[in-house]
Length: 254
Image (cartoon, rainbow, N blue to C red; front, top):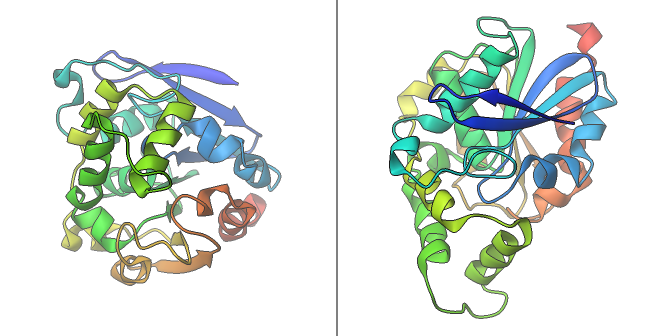
Protein backbone atom coordinates (compact mmCIF):
# COMPACT_ATOMS: atom_id res chain seq x y z
CA UNK A 1 0.00 0.00 0.00
CA UNK A 2 1.34 3.45 -0.95
CA UNK A 3 0.32 6.55 0.97
CA UNK A 4 1.57 10.13 0.92
CA UNK A 5 2.39 12.89 3.38
CA UNK A 6 3.54 16.46 3.03
CA UNK A 7 7.07 17.46 3.97
CA UNK A 8 7.69 20.70 5.85
CA UNK A 9 8.51 22.46 2.58
CA UNK A 10 5.36 21.17 0.87
CA UNK A 11 6.91 18.36 -1.21
CA UNK A 12 4.75 15.22 -1.57
CA UNK A 13 6.53 12.17 -0.17
CA UNK A 14 5.49 8.53 -0.28
CA UNK A 15 5.50 5.72 2.23
CA UNK A 16 4.58 2.04 2.02
CA UNK A 17 3.06 -0.18 4.72
CA UNK A 18 3.06 -3.87 5.52
CA UNK A 19 1.43 -5.49 8.54
CA UNK A 20 -0.33 -4.21 11.65
CA UNK A 21 0.70 -3.61 15.27
CA UNK A 22 3.51 -1.60 16.82
CA UNK A 23 4.98 0.79 14.23
CA UNK A 24 8.49 0.34 12.86
CA UNK A 25 9.69 3.08 10.50
CA UNK A 26 12.34 1.66 8.14
CA UNK A 27 14.30 3.91 5.76
CA UNK A 28 16.01 2.62 2.61
CA UNK A 29 19.48 3.36 1.25
CA UNK A 30 20.78 5.78 -1.39
CA UNK A 31 19.76 4.96 -5.00
CA UNK A 32 17.23 2.43 -3.66
CA UNK A 33 13.54 2.48 -2.73
CA UNK A 34 11.32 1.09 0.01
CA UNK A 35 10.14 -1.65 -2.34
CA UNK A 36 13.65 -2.73 -3.26
CA UNK A 37 15.28 -2.57 0.18
CA UNK A 38 12.49 -3.86 2.37
CA UNK A 39 9.65 -5.44 0.41
CA UNK A 40 11.25 -7.30 -2.51
CA UNK A 41 13.53 -9.45 -0.34
CA UNK A 42 10.86 -10.21 2.26
CA UNK A 43 12.32 -8.25 5.18
CA UNK A 44 9.19 -6.19 5.78
CA UNK A 45 6.99 -9.29 5.81
CA UNK A 46 9.35 -11.13 8.15
CA UNK A 47 9.10 -8.26 10.63
CA UNK A 48 5.36 -7.79 10.11
CA UNK A 49 4.83 -11.46 10.92
CA UNK A 50 6.15 -10.72 14.43
CA UNK A 51 3.31 -8.25 15.02
CA UNK A 52 4.60 -4.98 13.54
CA UNK A 53 3.24 -2.32 11.23
CA UNK A 54 6.25 -1.66 9.01
CA UNK A 55 6.18 1.87 7.55
CA UNK A 56 8.75 2.45 4.80
CA UNK A 57 9.18 5.92 3.27
CA UNK A 58 10.66 6.60 -0.12
CA UNK A 59 13.28 9.25 0.54
CA UNK A 60 13.02 12.57 -1.26
CA UNK A 61 14.48 12.09 -4.76
CA UNK A 62 13.70 8.35 -4.71
CA UNK A 63 10.93 5.93 -5.59
CA UNK A 64 7.39 7.31 -5.50
CA UNK A 65 8.38 10.49 -3.66
CA UNK A 66 8.92 13.91 -5.20
CA UNK A 67 12.16 14.32 -7.13
CA UNK A 68 12.68 18.08 -7.36
CA UNK A 69 15.74 19.33 -9.25
CA UNK A 70 15.86 22.67 -7.44
CA UNK A 71 18.86 22.70 -5.03
CA UNK A 72 16.81 24.81 -2.62
CA UNK A 73 14.66 21.74 -1.97
CA UNK A 74 17.68 19.93 -0.46
CA UNK A 75 18.95 22.55 1.96
CA UNK A 76 20.05 21.74 5.50
CA UNK A 77 19.28 18.44 7.18
CA UNK A 78 16.45 17.78 4.75
CA UNK A 79 16.29 13.97 4.92
CA UNK A 80 16.04 14.04 8.71
CA UNK A 81 13.45 16.83 8.38
CA UNK A 82 11.44 14.56 6.10
CA UNK A 83 11.74 11.65 8.51
CA UNK A 84 10.57 13.77 11.42
CA UNK A 85 7.67 15.02 9.29
CA UNK A 86 6.65 11.40 8.68
CA UNK A 87 6.80 10.62 12.41
CA UNK A 88 4.59 13.65 12.99
CA UNK A 89 2.20 12.53 10.24
CA UNK A 90 1.92 9.14 11.94
CA UNK A 91 1.04 10.85 15.23
CA UNK A 92 4.17 9.57 16.96
CA UNK A 93 6.10 12.76 17.75
CA UNK A 94 7.23 12.65 21.38
CA UNK A 95 6.11 9.03 21.74
CA UNK A 96 8.25 5.98 22.43
CA UNK A 97 5.56 3.67 21.04
CA UNK A 98 7.42 3.03 17.79
CA UNK A 99 10.82 1.90 16.55
CA UNK A 100 13.06 3.45 13.91
CA UNK A 101 15.77 2.16 11.62
CA UNK A 102 17.33 2.14 8.20
CA UNK A 103 19.98 0.74 5.92
CA UNK A 104 23.01 2.70 4.65
CA UNK A 105 21.73 6.24 3.96
CA UNK A 106 18.61 5.17 5.85
CA UNK A 107 20.78 4.36 8.87
CA UNK A 108 22.55 7.70 8.59
CA UNK A 109 19.18 9.45 8.39
CA UNK A 110 18.01 7.49 11.43
CA UNK A 111 21.05 8.69 13.38
CA UNK A 112 20.33 12.30 12.35
CA UNK A 113 16.72 11.94 13.52
CA UNK A 114 17.82 10.46 16.84
CA UNK A 115 20.32 13.17 17.69
CA UNK A 116 17.70 15.76 16.75
CA UNK A 117 15.18 14.46 19.21
CA UNK A 118 13.29 11.50 17.73
CA UNK A 119 12.20 9.26 20.62
CA UNK A 120 11.64 5.70 19.34
CA UNK A 121 11.84 2.86 21.80
CA UNK A 122 14.58 1.11 19.81
CA UNK A 123 16.72 1.82 16.77
CA UNK A 124 18.35 -0.15 13.95
CA UNK A 125 21.41 1.03 12.00
CA UNK A 126 21.98 -1.34 9.06
CA UNK A 127 24.89 -1.38 6.60
CA UNK A 128 26.66 1.32 8.57
CA UNK A 129 29.95 1.90 10.36
CA UNK A 130 31.23 4.74 12.50
CA UNK A 131 32.88 6.68 9.67
CA UNK A 132 29.70 6.59 7.59
CA UNK A 133 27.97 8.51 10.39
CA UNK A 134 30.73 10.94 11.32
CA UNK A 135 32.34 11.55 7.88
CA UNK A 136 29.76 11.21 5.13
CA UNK A 137 32.01 12.45 2.32
CA UNK A 138 33.94 9.20 1.93
CA UNK A 139 31.21 7.21 0.19
CA UNK A 140 29.85 10.34 -1.44
CA UNK A 141 32.69 10.58 -3.95
CA UNK A 142 31.89 7.12 -5.31
CA UNK A 143 28.27 8.08 -5.95
CA UNK A 144 29.18 11.48 -7.35
CA UNK A 145 31.35 9.77 -9.97
CA UNK A 146 28.54 7.38 -10.88
CA UNK A 147 26.03 10.22 -11.21
CA UNK A 148 28.18 12.64 -13.18
CA UNK A 149 30.62 10.62 -15.31
CA UNK A 150 29.80 10.20 -19.00
CA UNK A 151 32.25 7.30 -19.33
CA UNK A 152 31.34 3.62 -19.30
CA UNK A 153 32.79 1.93 -16.24
CA UNK A 154 34.67 -1.41 -16.41
CA UNK A 155 32.23 -4.28 -16.20
CA UNK A 156 31.63 -5.51 -12.62
CA UNK A 157 33.57 -2.62 -11.08
CA UNK A 158 31.89 -0.97 -8.04
CA UNK A 159 30.94 1.99 -10.23
CA UNK A 160 29.48 -0.29 -12.90
CA UNK A 161 27.41 -2.14 -10.30
CA UNK A 162 26.09 1.11 -8.81
CA UNK A 163 25.15 2.50 -12.21
CA UNK A 164 23.47 -0.76 -13.19
CA UNK A 165 21.45 -0.64 -9.97
CA UNK A 166 20.53 2.99 -10.62
CA UNK A 167 19.19 2.09 -14.06
CA UNK A 168 17.31 -0.90 -12.68
CA UNK A 169 15.36 1.21 -10.19
CA UNK A 170 14.84 4.08 -12.62
CA UNK A 171 16.70 6.61 -10.50
CA UNK A 172 16.76 10.31 -11.38
CA UNK A 173 20.46 11.33 -11.51
CA UNK A 174 19.77 15.07 -11.17
CA UNK A 175 17.62 14.65 -8.07
CA UNK A 176 19.99 12.06 -6.58
CA UNK A 177 22.95 14.37 -6.99
CA UNK A 178 21.05 16.96 -4.95
CA UNK A 179 20.34 14.31 -2.29
CA UNK A 180 24.05 13.52 -2.22
CA UNK A 181 24.89 17.16 -1.55
CA UNK A 182 22.52 17.12 1.43
CA UNK A 183 24.43 14.47 3.42
CA UNK A 184 25.06 15.58 7.02
CA UNK A 185 27.84 14.47 9.36
CA UNK A 186 26.99 13.52 12.93
CA UNK A 187 29.89 14.33 15.31
CA UNK A 188 31.05 11.31 17.28
CA UNK A 189 30.28 13.03 20.56
CA UNK A 190 26.63 13.37 19.60
CA UNK A 191 26.26 9.59 19.45
CA UNK A 192 26.26 9.47 23.25
CA UNK A 193 22.79 11.03 23.15
CA UNK A 194 21.40 7.95 21.36
CA UNK A 195 20.40 6.06 24.50
CA UNK A 196 17.89 3.69 22.90
CA UNK A 197 18.83 0.02 22.56
CA UNK A 198 20.34 0.07 19.07
CA UNK A 199 21.11 -2.79 16.72
CA UNK A 200 24.02 -2.28 14.34
CA UNK A 201 23.57 -4.96 11.67
CA UNK A 202 26.08 -5.30 8.86
CA UNK A 203 27.37 -7.75 6.29
CA UNK A 204 30.46 -9.65 7.34
CA UNK A 205 32.35 -8.24 4.32
CA UNK A 206 30.90 -4.74 4.57
CA UNK A 207 33.34 -2.01 5.55
CA UNK A 208 32.02 0.50 3.01
CA UNK A 209 31.03 2.91 5.77
CA UNK A 210 33.80 2.13 8.24
CA UNK A 211 33.77 -0.21 11.21
CA UNK A 212 30.35 -1.39 12.41
CA UNK A 213 31.96 -2.60 15.65
CA UNK A 214 33.27 0.90 16.34
CA UNK A 215 29.81 2.30 15.71
CA UNK A 216 28.22 -0.18 18.12
CA UNK A 217 30.90 0.64 20.72
CA UNK A 218 30.25 4.38 20.35
CA UNK A 219 26.56 3.97 21.23
CA UNK A 220 25.58 3.75 24.91
CA UNK A 221 23.34 0.73 24.23
CA UNK A 222 24.64 -0.53 20.91
CA UNK A 223 25.00 -4.16 19.88
CA UNK A 224 26.44 -5.62 16.70
CA UNK A 225 24.92 -8.41 14.61
CA UNK A 226 26.84 -9.68 11.58
CA UNK A 227 24.98 -11.19 8.62
CA UNK A 228 26.32 -12.73 5.40
CA UNK A 229 27.43 -10.56 2.50
CA UNK A 230 28.90 -7.22 1.57
CA UNK A 231 27.16 -3.84 1.41
CA UNK A 232 25.15 -4.68 -1.70
CA UNK A 233 24.43 -8.36 -1.09
CA UNK A 234 23.63 -8.26 2.65
CA UNK A 235 20.48 -6.24 2.02
CA UNK A 236 19.23 -9.02 -0.26
CA UNK A 237 19.91 -11.80 2.27
CA UNK A 238 16.96 -12.97 4.37
CA UNK A 239 19.28 -12.96 7.39
CA UNK A 240 18.97 -9.16 7.52
CA UNK A 241 15.21 -9.23 8.07
CA UNK A 242 15.53 -12.04 10.62
CA UNK A 243 18.19 -10.14 12.56
CA UNK A 244 16.00 -7.05 12.78
CA UNK A 245 12.93 -9.11 13.73
CA UNK A 246 14.87 -11.01 16.41
CA UNK A 247 16.21 -7.75 17.86
CA UNK A 248 12.73 -6.23 18.05
CA UNK A 249 11.12 -9.38 19.42
CA UNK A 250 7.46 -9.73 20.34
CA UNK A 251 5.87 -6.27 20.73
CA UNK A 252 3.55 -7.70 23.38
CA UNK A 253 6.60 -8.24 25.61
CA UNK A 254 7.34 -4.50 25.79
